[in-house]
Image (cartoon, rainbow, N blue to C red):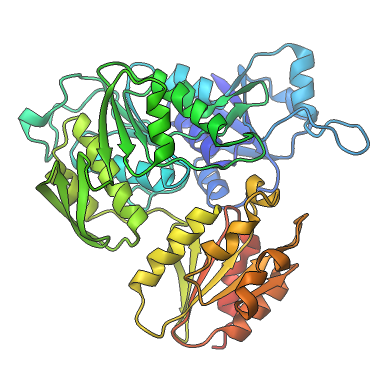
Length: 475
């Protein structure tokens, strides 16, 4: 069929486009203000991109319109529709569907779905799990909200049936069920303007990781309890033969399970858990109910990634991958683009790119980098509050806490309705604020000295700041 995707350059919709193309469908799409890596990936796949949401795209005449959650019924100041194409689709009565619904009906049916949910770490953990299953010879399909470096693409269909030869999997460890596997990043954000349920309720997983749960998405959720309710909707869809892999450190997840649970549960993270770690995040033993079952030694930093690894190992075990095989595969894990990705070094000053967009994510990212540094090396944290929650200022009071381990902090405050300088006042002289990217670059370049690590954090393109910083640093 021919599908036309509205909002095609979002990480989820871009991955869906790649899957549809691989399945043999004709795929076109539109979006506004596109930026890499998704725009590059789509063009490489030969998918036609149209800028904007003009009603003239009705001439595409697809079999179905797939609607991303960027699309709304919003009106501009002059009362004209913000998304004329959507208005034209509604007027015409042509068939349309949300991205998650299309995915369920056309890709996930008949597969053993492994879903990774949580406020933080979804993309990284989904990538880890896909890689572990790949190394075990299970040829999984996957859809990740980023680009895992081990694969180079954000999505693929995977094997249509479970491979007969399963690489490093022992025969006795093979899944009893012969469904092909699909690993998906399970987002709690809403599905579409006409379906306000969380995306993940569409995925019907048999294995589900509940990695952590904090308040986020203040634009659509009133409080933490509202998000917990959506997580419980996900729990309700897991069959009795399924497995929930749950972070034992999170009281919010304990409340979710207390609402009702009908599946096997495996815990990780807490001192008394089914799966726990002994050692530093870069080199640790994996314990299953206190007994060593594997060891992970890798180039990844941070306690959060140690927890991501435990969740991955517990989920992979549910489809027959022994923990020792999973741990060995993680040693080859190369992380995800925009997760502590080194963008360049000039005169011993290194620039990193990271997706951190929530105070807890900022804190864990900075802490992970701090653990890798030598005494005397400094962290210059450069960030923009760009997510909907951060733009609303809901969590502005947590920013000084999130930046505690940074030596200096630089905030891009353009477009904010709240006072970033006031929010960062507890940091005193350690924090600077700029209203535009060029001023921010000048501030950072003036402060940098040999040995510094410049950590850029945003869930958007950040105005190409990484290249601008590398050019501005003294050569």
